[in-house]
Image (cartoon, rainbow, N blue to C red):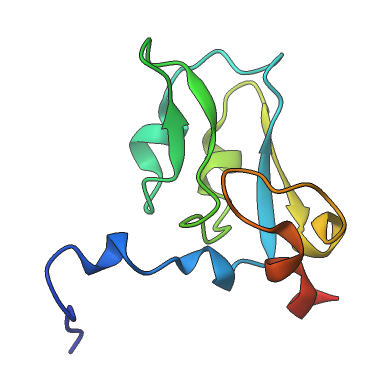
Length: 103
């Protein structure tokens, strides 16, 4: 049986460190249909004030690829975390921190 440590604990645990694949959004292809936002089990899809997809919160995304499978325009693609080890920080996460374990 699963338990919850304390109320709203999911917001405190940065489960993105479990990820081995990272979703990347091609803004040119994205039509903000919100299928990814509606179905993301980790509530990781970020929206602006106009409900347009602006990115992915990598602190919580576990890389399940559901967003990629649901995207009707193929705007979301999955990439190995190891390919981001030398990149810039995105959405507050140091890319190499996650990618280091999958090299």
